[in-house]
Length: 257
Image 1 (tube, rainbow, N blue to C red):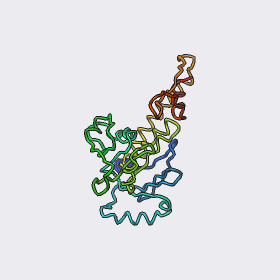
Image 2 (spheres, rainbow, N blue to C red):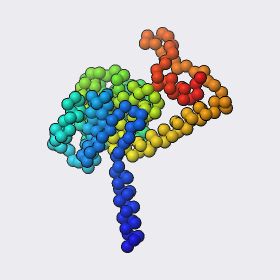
Image 3 (cartoon, one colour):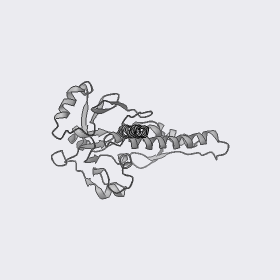
Image 4 (cartoon, rainbow, N blue to C red):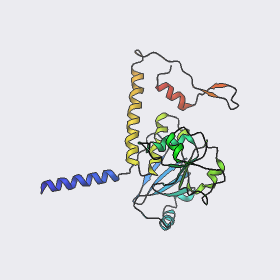
């Protein structure tokens, strides 16, 4: 009898932990909330809100979605978008986003990205499995259920065409490396990969801080580095020093003088 109770308790703990989607954003400028029905991601100081219907809720006819919009109207007073997870037809409007999504494709066999805007794709799996988006595409021609973009995305027309399913990634606006990396948690919600994302980020955070502290605490053992980060000017004629806070922070943590 006692053994059976222990076994049931173990199974219960396992199920709860497996379904646990609670996220904590320590660095990224993302606010996260969760209810029994949905998960809510708020960015841009609450002016952009993404409401994600949890797994296991059938919304094939969109009826539940209408009720969600009314129930969470406080979030929709400015700008809210509602999604059902996991996304099945993902589009990308900036190559910088690829790394975040492909983290959830560890074996490299089947990319989660189905459509891509642009030709400069260096990831073989993405290049082999995606279709190219055209500026004239719209929901009537391409069945996207999510289009990730950044403020640096050049495809403004495409983002407007898919406005209802467009999802902004603000990672490039973050000022520190760990804040940028933590956006993988944001992406994970749309695919039901919250546990995996949390575990992965915890490992990234531990490794980053370990190396940062190693540099800070052992300066007498390491050769000082004089490093600058260069970028091409807009007219591509000059190399100029890039002193953005993110890059200076990264170089400092790596041991730059």
